[in-house]
Length: 417
Image (tube, rainbow, N blue to C red):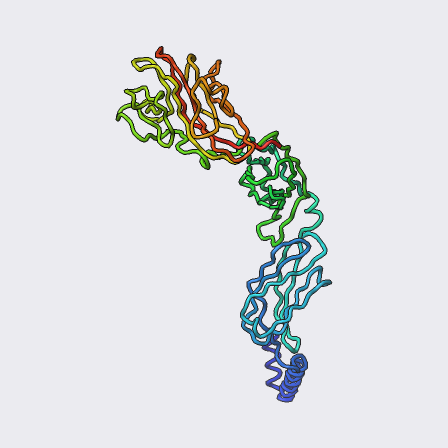
């Protein structure tokens, strides 16, 4: 067909000329139509927002993106909710080639699709940038539960209040708990307990007061907002008394592993920082208040028998000045037997009384070797004013195999609540 048509055109020059004129008019018409389409110039796209990321938040998201180096950009528009909602972010020259961060408030909770354009001063836009993000709100908030307290108590001996928390499912986004409490000086303080920790110890907790606590959540790893559970309150009962260790404040060489001022290079010696009476020095009239037991541990010692003479009015004590208050003087890790007369005592002045005088003259005394035997013996006493006292041990023992060994001593103040 094509060959027949061409043959006919070439055989009839008039028809060929007519065809050429028709094609020329058609080409001109298409050119005119294109000029009409681009009569305002060629299509020009400006630089788009680059490296875009949307961070989740509470009823909002945070948009981060880099303004490209296109100097024509004057604003950025962000659309969402099928372009029913939008914000305009003005772009200054200082923002060109820099990263922007903008919070966008969004009432609807859940995933959102965003379309982002940049514009020049004449309204030309960039190609669209599509991204998505998520908002969290009341629906997520209503499902949060507090990390509960398992136990809470104040230790009478240390005065430290310990709060133990239960575990929680990490998939909820939990990462910490804030605990607010009242201090001894009536000021409030807040401490944060990481989810990896289950215990907090409060050294300055006001005895018998309450704690408030709430748990912190991040719904995902890119959330810019922290969510909190409802606040719970827990009352921590006050103990009847608090014992505060003041041993190192007033006593020296309190053990464990007492030190010696001198010894026989074998087993026996004299305690450093303690006064040892002549009656307690029954080892060659030189040593007797210190024993290196089992070749490794220094102990306070009374011993009579097994080749040693009796102990008569043996006194081992320290002289200290104590302010008014109630105290507990304690001998711990005791190893002893029965027999003789043995006291734990505190008395006015620079010396303990002789054994026979202690019941009548001591401020307070107790039996050092109670029966049945105990590993700890405590002596509680009260001073109404600042007083110089001697505090320690007194013993009279026959040389029949009687002994008392003390591993350490402690001095506490007692506050009754």
